[in-house]
Image 1 (cartoon, rainbow, N blue to C red):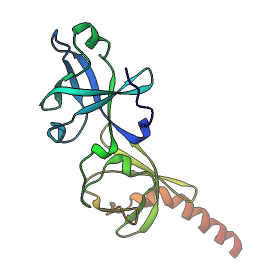
Image 2 (image 1 turned 90 degrees about the horizontal axis):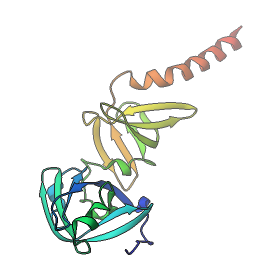
Image 3 (image 1 turned 30 degrees about the vertical axis):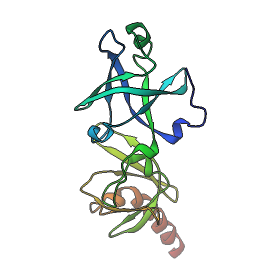
Length: 195
């Protein structure tokens, strides 16, 4: 098998996983974890993580049905060869993602962006994104304060990729939850100076 030494996981996005074998011809059922799976119907290659290395597999046949796909790779010709791939994580290079306009974003784009709230102004820079049970949350630091911002589409205004900013309209009081203790400490210090 040929390893892909020039592409790293950091250059890719998680696409899904090989769930199980499909037929004796070596075809596999792939569970896809992506928006708009039909966008990938003409994909000619997938990267599978095998022994902590990305290995390219070229597509002979690909049939997408919802969030599942039946894939037959050029180099896999039997059930026994296919069984080795079951459970492998599937990746694609970032460049395979569809280009989005300013009304949409990918989660991997967010770390490093400055969050601008429509009322508060600059909140801080996204450090990382967490997946919580109900939604994704951006971890942002403002000075010493950690702020967790729900990445809810209701709050989203736009992303400006050139200026590396994410514009949101956060609910009233959300930032106060995180920044109030810092403000209270500053008020306490000025009260002590008055005595």
